[in-house]
Image (cartoon, rainbow, N blue to C red):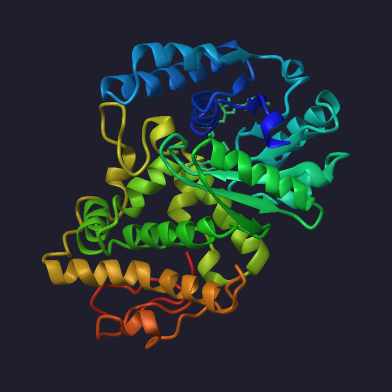
Length: 375
Ligand SMILES: NC(=O)c1ccc[n+]([C@@H]2O[C@H](COP(=O)([O-])OP(=O)(O)OC[C@H]3O[C@@H](n4cnc5c(N)ncnc54)[C@H](O)[C@@H]3O)[C@@H](O)[C@H]2O)c1
């Protein structure tokens, strides 16, 4: 069946959808990308063009390859154009009302054999599948940002997904150069259940003037060796997406550590969504972002040396490493306790107590005392 796959639809050509369309077209699929209106469609086309021309500039793609990839993508505003798609990936904003509208429509438009996938970061795939008359053929296919670069793709099954669908989608993911990981439908799936609470903790540290945005990001890149810090990552992922994931985790588990940082909520309300809006924790359109003036901006200068960078990195990462270890040892994606105890494996990894209870960072990288009030 995988061999028969030819026509792929992508609904929503924003930060994720444009990259997803590019990835399929690069792998030889005929792609139809659908946007909400002509203006958004031009933006989506621009995202794809920009990404491909960057690859040409870097010598990773020839001009001819770029042209043939673009030639495989049809840009449309009418969903009806997906009437003969074999496989459709939805990447509209993270709102259930929008997903509902798209999925009920796709179910009407597409043939019964078409597999429908959502790229949701946090919403219930089960609920989305139940909106259609083909729940066995609905999955989550969760790409990571930027989609053309990141290798992981979570293939999310619900209680209704047929095993054949999972198999086909995993094969398709391999054909487009991704590494599929099969996970079940739970809040945050696996990657975001670990990653977004870590970002949220970093926002709390920033909000409480424990460290500046630069200090937080530097601690993680220099001391922990990760490619980017959590606030840079938040801007890349989109603060609205981070907030949606936190809210869904809170809704499902009701654990204090899953309460979204108030600053995260305020920034989303203010339209500071990160790269896609031109500003988040950092500015991307020339001027700096108002975030610089928020508590914990460049004013905080408490991380003075490398040792303190290590402390900060430890404080931010330890609770989430504990979560990952629990996921492995329990062979289930669901963390069962909310409190990584002081003295746990991750806490003592570097021979000193870490500063987390209820997954909360402490009031200072040097101290274990902390407010127990979440967010
Ligand atoms: N940004 C990330 O890092 C990331 C990573 C993984 C998954 N996701 C998920 O991917 C989805 C999209 O996120 P994004 O960051 O690309 O959002 P985005 O806001 O950048 O893009 C969404 C696009 O959908 C379009 N759109 C809105 N309504 C539409 C409709 N009815 N029909 C067609 N197009 C429509 C918008 O015009 C916009 O271009 C969300 O579910 C998000 O949770 C995001």
